[in-house]
Length: 433
Ligand SMILES: Nc1ncnc2c1ncn2[C@@H]1O[C@H](COP(=O)(O)OP(=O)(O)OP(=O)(O)O)[C@@H](O)[C@H]1O
Image 1 (cartoon, rainbow, N blue to C red):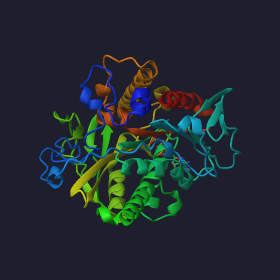
Image 2: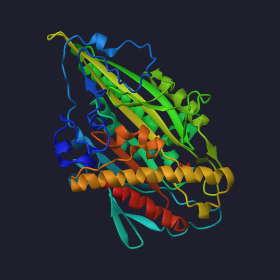
Image 3: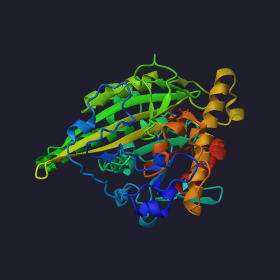
Image 4: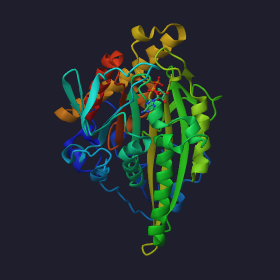
């Protein structure tokens, strides 16, 4: 997260972000994959497995023409006042946006809904137990899927089109609405039920394809060509499975020695250019995701799942006779739910899963603490523990450096979830640092 690295990096997007000691400095550069043009092929394209036979991109880039992404930060979370206006000062210059979504209370038939333990006190704050927490935006139980998309979807797409690695994470207690927010019900994605229930992912792709078409129309002289390649994986008990080909289990994360880019070996990649291409991938991957019935959620996701789209745009400068290529990576990350094992009475496999989930979430929390501390103190850190979990190792390029991140923290208003809700809000507050 740019804002978590340093003031200097924030104001110098063209320069490598200073890397806090310990790991290879090159890892924290603006990834070469993002924007480049010239004769050298991006051998470290993390999306192409080393065995890939795809034509090296460098073959079509005869002259050096380095294009750097514009600073898109002012555009982040530009939402209409009707939805959830953000306070300008807070969100304007940050690489990470933290948005809280309060789910509707669970109603028991024949019973009145109990008083909620937290409430939204303004467009960007919530109060619980006399404490107020402030974020970039807070969406209450009345917010619709469309409202929520408007809040985080368009800025994500714009950042990606500008060549920045950008991600959305959903984080929260089990049953608090992460999966609902990210994907929506499967029946809505497949078109079997009301489209208004569709989650962020299908809406983001719809918007992406519409924006690509718009850009191509606007810049006809540049002969813009976009290509999008998607993959879908889950991390379950610290093992990676390809959700588009679930026979491929225990896949390994590799690091390209030349560029220090991280990729998953042998992961299925599919080219997409319309919703007709994306929808089956979402449906297939989500159907293959590991879910179980738990005491907190009848259909609980037991894994972290990551949908990645690499967007490549090529443009020609006919006058100069040069081509330029811009690449970015969009990650949609639905984290498995945190849970108190004592409260959920997990046992056997569920207990092992819960242990792994909580361990990897706490590795993510620790990492965020460290990045926040580096950002605040400006001091280098001996060792940034990206490798403490598969999740942080895989997503390190989305967590540090110049990546853009929207962290969606989902919470329940029920009294029985109060301690989990508080812990989610504290996590969210650290992320906002
Ligand atoms: N904002 C919301 N509006 C309507 N229904 C919701 C909302 N959020 C969650 N739900 C419903 O609550 C139930 C649990 O939500 P969901 O599965 O998204 O939780 P989760 O946080 O992903 O849980 P887990 O971590 O256990 O997978 C689902 O039936 C979902 O449809």
